[in-house]
Amino acid sequence: MGMSVTISAADAQDAEHILKLQYLCYQSEAELYGDWSIEPLTQTLDALRAELADGHALVARLGDEIIASVRGRVDEAGTVVIAHLFVHPRMRRHGLGGRLLDAIERQFAGDAAPKRYQLFSGHRSDGNLRLYRRKGYAAVGTREIGPRLTLVTLEKAA
Image (cartoon, rainbow, N blue to C red; front, side, top):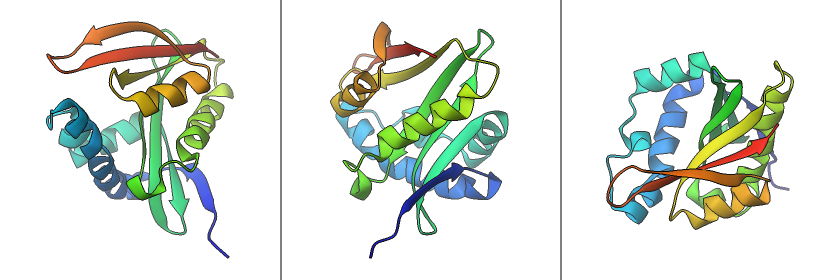
């Protein structure tokens, strides 16, 4: 019998594991866009620790191993900004991304009634964009980051 995946709040002790997994997971994005200077690959451990202290973060574990993560925070307008949703390459295509997205939305639903959820994805990240659309997100804008990368902003009402 296999182990079950559990989703729980991340804590300070998870920071190093999250950062290492983030680095592994964003390699495919860097390759897709030909840019290894993207923020998830250059983020420092101290910056991640500060981000974890400032918002909500969830991890998915298979036994003791962190295999996926997502972070979110509420901005000044009451929008929940969801970021850094990633799943270990060997665990992709098993619904973990969708489960984490649902879980982070639930995490904020109990707070001061957010107005909307918002996230970003690169314009060539077809799998990510498909997941977000399937979960009810719609594109509301784009922003050119560089010659190879345009960020798509997606939102859905809370």
